Length: 213
Image (cartoon, rainbow, N blue to C red; front, top):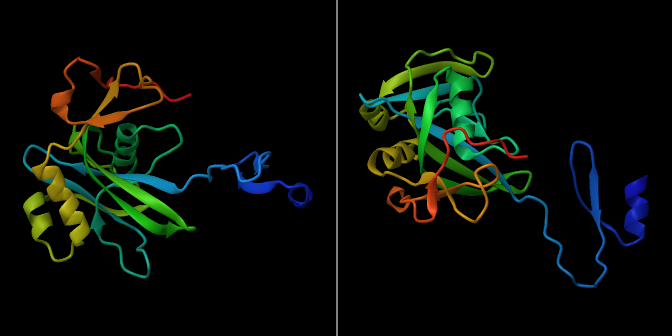
C-alpha cells in the first residue's frame, strides 16, 4: 500500500532489493536520476594445461529447447566479487579444478538478454594447478579435458566458443592491476596490457585481493 501512496505524491518507483524498496522524487523538474543497473555480468574460463588441453563442461539442461553442448565453465559474478575471483570460484565449483586467473582475453555484450537487460560476458584465461576433476553433479552432467585442436575442429562446438578459445590462445589479453591514487584493490580493478605494469603508477594486483566492503 505504501508505493501507490508515494507515487500519488510525486515519487517514482525505481527498484527493489532483498530488504528495501527505493523510490525517487525530482525536487527540480527535469532533473536526471540515473536508472538502476542495466547489465548482468558473467565470466567464463579458458583453463589450459601446458599440453594444450582445455577444461570443458556440459550442463544438465540446454537453452531454448536445444540440447546442452560442451562449453567453458563459468557463471555470474556475485556482488562485490572481482572478475578473477569469480572465474576461479566458478571453475572450482563446477569442475573441482583449482586454477589461477591470468588475464582477460575478450568479452562480448548482448542486448535484450534477460528481463530487458543487457549482458556482458568476460572470458578469462586460467592456469590449472591440477587436472583432477570433481564434477558438480547437481548442475553439470559431464566434465572433461579435451585437446584444444580437437575442440577447435569439432563440428559439435558452437563457433562462439571456438572463437573465444582462439582469442585466449593467440593473445596475451589484458591483466589485472590497479592504478595508484584511484582506489585500491578492495574496491576496484583495472585491466591493462602487461607491459604497462612497470611500477610507474600501474601496479600489479595482489594475489589475494581483499573483499569489497
